[in-house]
Image 1: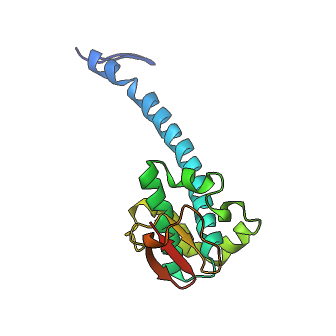
Image 2 (image 1 turned 30 degrees about the vertical axis):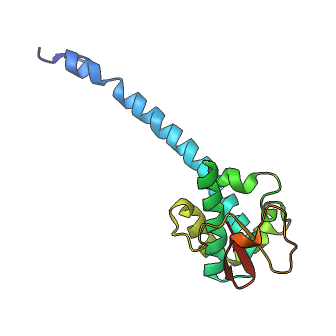
Length: 157
């Protein structure tokens, strides 16, 4: 069937009518993706701030090691890194009042780490925990599970 033009009104073939629904669906999907990416951007920002609050006094390798622990926990628990860092009593950096100020000191590094957190090459030997040498040993950390020390952080499986 040919298109028929009746002045301002145009009749479409059956094939053209079948595809008319596609544009609104694509627009709706794009809007959903924008909303989701906005939420992800906020989550990534919080992850970056927690990494900074936990290790702002470290260099890029120390920051990366903390990011690896977050990623290792996320993989072990099959949850997102955001769920890991915001879980109660998991990362004290999440509740640190100066978290954003620390973040600004290392922003370019922690932003990159947070964006790529689940794809980082692990440099901690699969560590799920870390502590500073001057902190007490928590009951869930076993000395025999020590994996690596980097500057002022000790890492454990």
